[in-house]
Length: 84
Image (cartoon, rainbow, N blue to C red; front, side, top):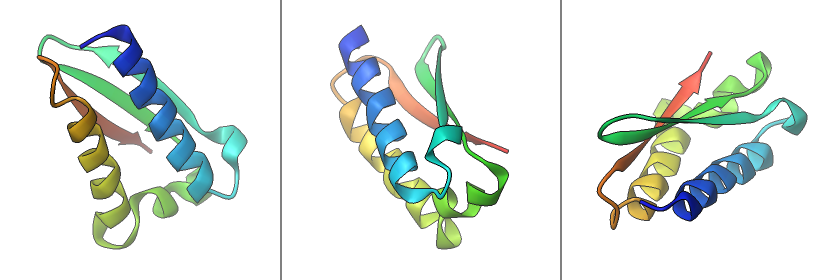
């Protein structure tokens, strides 16, 4: 997976999270490279955590699905971790 794809995934997660929360300035996305996967660590303000996760985790699952689709061509998969 190229660095451009990783940057695009980071920008996508950042855009989606900022669109969902009340405090968009608190949104941070860190990318950690592992052996088999890229881990995107998303942190938001404590009050906005539920908005990013969604009812029964539906919003988080949708974001993870988008990341899986973007990383399908690469040899590594993308994983979203929502930090508390």
